[in-house]
Image (cartoon, rainbow over all chains, first blue to last red; front, side):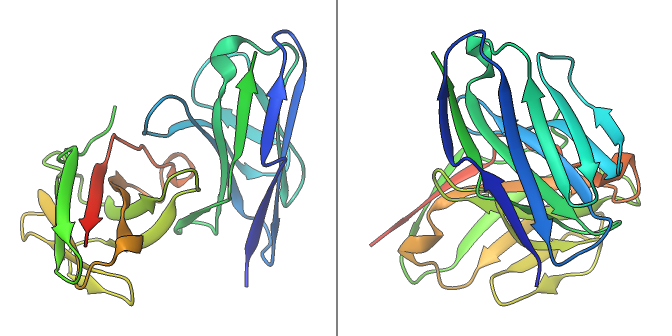
Length: 111
Length: 112
């Protein structure tokens, strides 16, 4: 069966520091991968999605970037964090043209 | 912008059926209706999806109206563990990587 991992689970970072969040998927090949952010309250916002290695689509202009160095690895990065980057970051995967499944998330607090 | 409308909150008695409505009046012919739920501080959990026929699985039933402009998620025997925010989403799997656009959802409280 397929499993999606995210780490770290929680992170506290100072403003201006860099960020790297990692997501990996097991048990499947060539998945679509997604990064979402959930800020205050509820409602998720899609940040990036990828349909293959090195193929990244950005949904919202922001202080973040994404990379997909390997088939089942998706990384979310920032060179300098802002207060507004705080939130709950969720990675998701799907087989081609199929249901998305979410990871456990990383809760980021920028101070 | 979310393409669905849901009530912000609902209550349900434990053991009773929970019926969560969703309006999606602008749904396109190739868009599916998806339901996810999110328990506090966890990632969203997939529940069920459908195109135009009613669907049932071990978690829930999905009833889609004939004109496809609205749907209802039914949890047949709600338990306290079903307390969560429920999201109704319409999505075209073949467009832009099959991305999901989440709205504010319905906060379901199951009470003893």
